[in-house]
Amino acid sequence: MKYLVTGGAGRLGRSVVAVLASAGHHVVSVDVATVDGLPAEQVVADLGADGVAGALTAEHAPDGIVHLAAIPYPGLLPDADTFAINTRLAFAVLEAAAASGVGAVLLASSPTVMGYGAPSGWTPQYLPLDEQHPVAPWNGYAASKVAVEQLGAMFARRDPDGPRIGSFRPCYVIAPEEWAGAPTQQGHTILERLDDPALAAVALFNYVDARDAGDFVLRWFEHAGEVPNGAVFFVGAPDSLLRGPVGPALAEFVPATADAARALDPDTAVFSSALAERLLGWRATRTWRTELAEVLK
Image 1 (cartoon, helix red, strand yellow):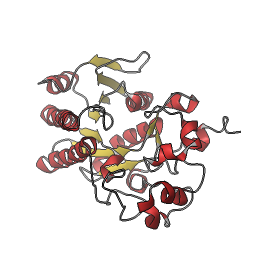
Image 2 (cartoon, rainbow, N blue to C red):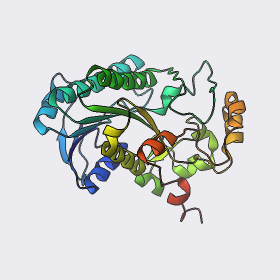
Image 3 (cartoon, one colour):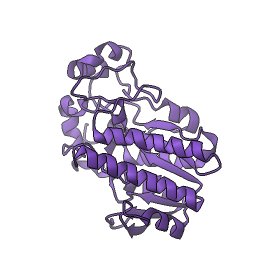
Image 4 (cartoon, rainbow, N blue to C red):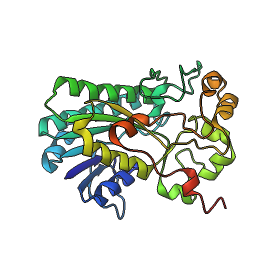
């Protein structure tokens, strides 16, 4: 099979490309940059430019597309720009896939659609959070990800005979080199996040190893025709990025979650990936305990 990965040179993209390539697939990475040693055919292109997504999809004729390219987190650009860029990219990719007869498209969303961290306050209806919990975006980035999910659902409804479409919400992505001490997306190391729970509390202690997220991508493509078209999945580690029990930590750092947090087991994740396990047989196998075992001895 042939897969086109937008944003293939990024923190998540590199692992997605590696997993797909290791499974024997031909991978084309489309990004504004290249990476030495990436096991893919690398194309430098701006998918936001008029006609580029359509031309690349027609040229490479992939069986599936993983759409990761986006402004990657809130605050990098003004909200209006982030929203416009992320939604424009997703629409262009979906439109190109439909026009070129691509079999399946998987879109990257984000757990931030839940609305945690809102200046106006946020209280979950229940914990752990799952795909049925209402979204409540409060910035342009999170709103763009809700829109991306809805664009996927729209294309699925509009053309039932077109590409199979799905969206996934990867938790705070940890690239392989970050277990060895490289800085995470926020600029802290994993050990710093474990030593100071306030650093991870802003994301409700969620995380996922990029390789596990890559495994999810592969599993979704293998079963895309068997799951609901347009479905959304949380993709995260089975525990929290925290040395102690998660309920008391949530109550301390995010007081509005205190009531709901009482239902959580001490080592559980605040974001449930049970749907991915039930429908796809996917479960993350890497945790901070497995990946830092030697360091923590």
